[in-house]
Length: 175
Figure 1 (tube, rainbow, N blue to C red):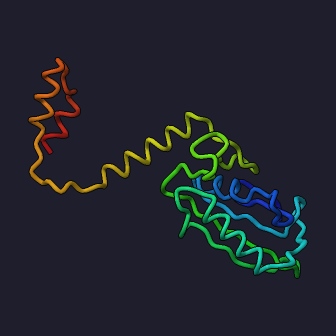
Figure 2 (spheres, rainbow, N blue to C red; figure 1 turned 90 degrees about the vertical axis):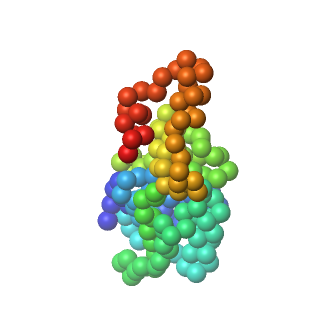
């Protein structure tokens, strides 16, 4: 087995291992991915000594260390490869991109994307674009409690500022 754009190997779970970075990168990647714990960089299964304890630590670190909540977008299971027990962290692509390491927020230190076989920091521009898209999508899905809305007040307000609504906006009002 080799690392790919969708597969990442980690020899062991340690405090220094940035599992959150890898999971964030896969959540932000268009296909998701898998992180294996207990496989070295050469693809050799070395196993995991404390499967249950490490699985609990992984779930806890992902749940607490990543925003927005990745719950329902990852699964932590075990697998035997070359007769060695390894942990498989399956990560689906998320729908609330960009995901980020909670302690660093929406920044280049918090947002990552899978590029080839590496998890790379996102640019500020990409973070802003993904966030803007997420906010637009969520706002359009919020139902208004007022079904009799009109754009008359908006026209009056724009007229007072000597502004005009564009033709595209005018078309959407009529629908």
